[in-house]
Amino acid sequence: MGMRIMVVGGGGREHAVIRAIRKNPAVTEIFALPGNGGIAADATCVDIGAKDIDGMVRFAVDQAIDYAIVTPDDPLVLGAVDALTAAGIPCFGPDRKAAIIEGSKAFSKNLMKKYGIPTAAYEVFDDMDKALAYLDTAPCPIVVKADGLALGKGVIIANDREEARQAVVDMMANAKFGKSGSTVVIEEFLTGPEVSVLAFTDGHTVKPMVSSMDHKRAGDNDTGLNTGGMGTVAPNPYYTPAIAKRCMEEIFLPTVRAMNAEGRPFKGCLYFGLMLTPKGPRVIEYNCRFGDPETQVVLPLLESDLLTVMQAVTEERLDQVEVTFSGKAAACVIMASEGYPSHYEKGFPITIPAETAPYVFSAGTALRDGQLVSAGGRVLGVSAVADTLTEALQLAYGRVSTIHFDGAFYRHDIGRRALQAGKESV
Ligand code: AMP
Ligand code: GLY
Image (cartoon, rainbow, N blue to C red; front, side, top):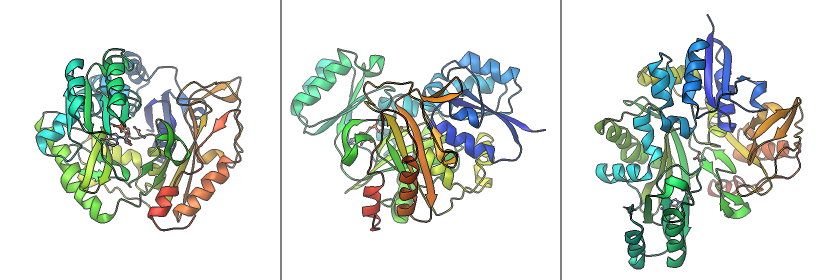
């Protein structure tokens, strides 16, 4: 009997997961909840939102789903994996108790302090007057973060005290990030290259994936607002084998052990957002899931079968499967809607040549009378794999140039810093 798989979510990351899962010959049907216009070419999209936990459980039971994969932060933090598991559906993803590692920055910072995991020094405040008083003597620049989920936008790097005070007032008094900002974390400003490492873990074994580098600012040369991510490359040249070893010993294993000790064993993909500071690697953030758009460069380099690895995580036998990567390089350039991450227009027809389509991960797209149209801020992730990063970038940008929709914009410098670090020429 073939396997029926359900993937919760509807972004470029989910499209990359679906493409990887499809490679397993035992898979006969993949449902995406809700998926998107482009994903519809690779899976059956079902109109159930990623936060509709009751709806997804009912669908999984009715459709006799054999395995569910939950990748977005919201359903994980809301307990989608708990609900599906209770209904007898085997699942990939952490339960609600473990997803708090992303759901609350105060939790994750306290965890790191308690277990000696290196991170920026910090204080947590739920009282605005105390937060403002603390800022009176704190050094600048300084970083102010909303406690809860804020789509990667709840982080303010304040260059001076006035900016920091404004950020605290916006979050705590003006509720700029809703309830997410009623508690704030104020932390030390760190410097150094950033590395994303996604790792499979079943609570016992940790198997890191190939490292990657995100580009978070909207504009070229890291200008403009923070976004969900405008492009990625893998591997990340700053992440040397020596640093990888240190991260495993000082960060990855201690984190998994700490979660166990807290009675919150983590099973799924644990995302380490790291900064390689002059004093060593530091955790900037944990995510309880695959990164977006990191997944779009990491999974195309995965040689092992993704579904097999995921099932091994669920069944806590990750030590028994191989997780190998190809040794090639990958790049992904996000094509976004003009104005993202602030206001933007949607509904523009998208044209993608047939030969380019297999390399395009669809994010904010919809189908309107059979025509693919833009439907979000980040619209497409255009990817390539090649022997070197230089070639992968050339291929990816070549593909970008063949795609059209009105108001499309993208960064022109994805991978530039990685190439400089890797001492390759463009
Ligand atoms: P986060 O959502 O916590 O990953 O933060 C978003 C971005 O803000 C990170 O990718 C960093 O570029 C930056 N950032 C966060 N925390 C710090 C920090 N303590 N020092 C310097 N930059 C930071
Ligand atoms: N690319 C960063 C994230 O997924 O949060």
